Length: 337
Image (cartoon, rainbow, N blue to C red; front, side, top):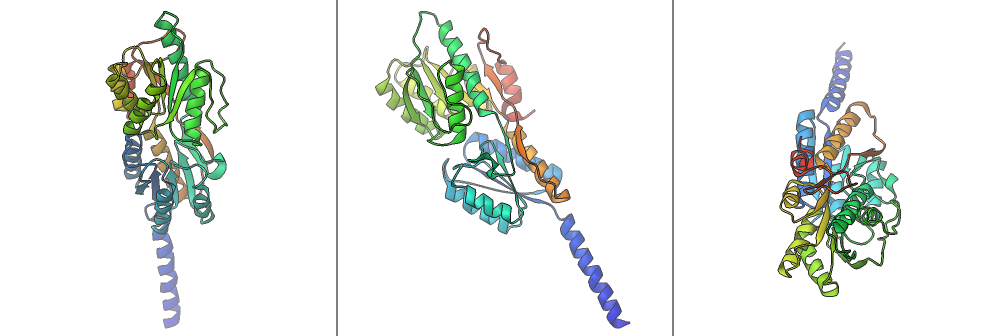
């Protein structure tokens, strides 16, 4: 009798343990490229909000700078050790991160790329991101129309302030911009930056304001008569504008960018940036957390690519280019409403 009771209690205890483990809050990790870029700050806020609403525990980490793969690998290992069953990551190095992701997936962890794909893209279970090539096409079309609207047959003398070599997002935006501008460009699958005769200077900004300013200053030495500046993101655009202003060339040079963050939209309203392709990091983060909670509940993984949308925002509409105004951009910045 005694031994039967003990067995029954042991069975009940193990059932209870299994039940409580099942009912425990899902642990989801978010790894961004940096802690400082406003885009990733918003992504983290969106993930934290979604985790709170869904009863999940969010762990967050980042590289020290854009391109810091080792920092992202360490964050991933720490999160898995802390019980994360889903990792959301914006890969800094689309290739170097692959072994760490494979190790995680082999342990049954679902890995979703946000904003930036791995190379190849099927290195993760899924990708929630902007169509970055389209984002580039939209600002390329706008820049071409805006240059023509200035009259006087001004030639296209383009400076591109890129991310850094080999990154898929950097290549997609750059090449999309060239395509939208009507220049020869690689397709969306290429990670090589297209080069056209109209591009008078190409420099890496690492998506950073100070580096963007330095890159623009260097390009002004080579190409003082620049007419159009493509920038990878709005911090780089703000840096480019500072350099142009210091050189007394801020009037008449068309700066275009990508992000549509709240500060970036203010810069569009102030005439610093002519147009920007707005993306929605809060949506990426919320979708990622929802997928992680669902996986914890049902064991069902998400797969494939989800396009989280892109909208061209400008203060001055151009004929033949579909864009929304600054008020709309402000209402939607970061995907907050």
